[in-house]
Length: 161
Image 1: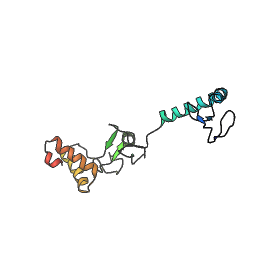
Image 2: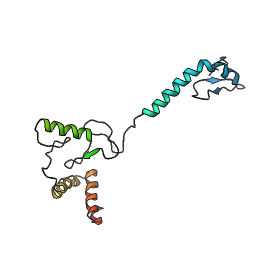
Image 3: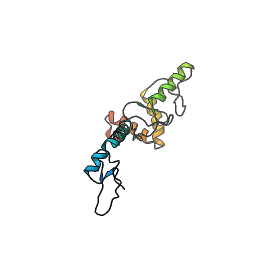
């Protein structure tokens, strides 16, 4: 490494110090840093803006829920996801909405957007539980979670676990 102002190399007796703002360049002393400041100022500001933008607009790698199996985007954390009762697959609301819109425009039967299994006409509790029970038998973690919640809400804590 060399001093950005005078070009002096870092030796045993001369330790170069980083630029105080972004640590982009090194200086052998305060005098060189002051002399080089007008040339370095704009570059330093630009780099600071780049770093700020990287931090501000960086998207998370994913969520603990994984990705939507249809659009492959990370599933949002919160309530903007749907769990399909037939296959116990989590999908984002965007894919669910797009499927509903496609079905309405084409006068199609309502089916699961992931497995294309026909959805029940009524949302009866017994019918819903029978769908989930099939997935519980296949050891689906999402179905096990739903079934545990179902029993817990009914007060049957022994069966919930």
